[in-house]
Amino acid sequence: MNATTVKLSVRNWAEEDRPSYKLLNYGAGSLTDAEIISLLVGSGTAQYNAVEIANHILCKFDRDLSKLSKAEVYELNDVEGVGTQTICKLMAAMELGKRRQMAGRSFAPDLCTATSIYNYMLPKMQDLKTEEFWVLLCNQNYKLIKPVRISQGGITETSVDIRIIMKEAVLCNATILAAVHNHPSGCIHPSRYDDELTNSIKRACQLMRIHFTDHVIVCDGQYYSYSERGRL
Image 1 (cartoon, rainbow, N blue to C red):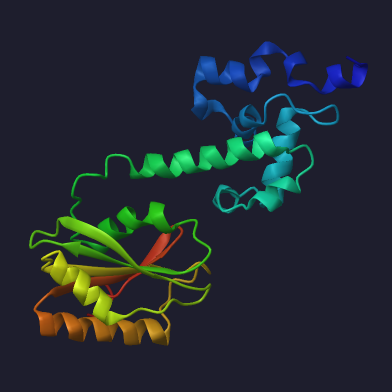
Image 2 (image 1 turned 30 degrees about the vertical axis):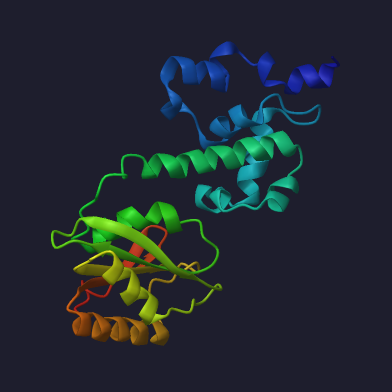
């Protein structure tokens, strides 16, 4: 081991400064984002220690964990010091975080508000790069019977067939229906197509005597609710 490697290696830091020591003695909450990622990176390279590589990863994505969670393999592979094993660990950690958000939601959630709809759908939609349209089929007490993905599309829109929505609602004996789609662009404002689609679903639900409770547009950290805006 040469002098440069000794100087750069996290193993040669004072024990109390090492991310692993801080995690074990003070908890994961005491670590910075870079220190947490460094534990996934592992031993680092001859040029950069694990914390430096972690900072390279964060800088690549503007130090935004939301952007990092959407990273493709080729984007991570461009970061110096990041190999296949580190990529696998990072992507597995991000997926585990999403599954943790969904844990405990296997029971029928109460979806009587736009906030509850948003909170339920965010883990499914927050990292998508294309639009998806879902319907949440509920009983008369707003308890979820079944979530159904109706369509997947491009970056700006996805095509939705009203007949499929109504078919799913009838097959599930749903009496309440909520529509949800995401805007990968981060803009919460509905498009003209969103408005037209909402009105079409509303008319179909009225015909079938199904209560159309809301159409929620999901973005990271915010949402748009047609019901809350008085547009249903």
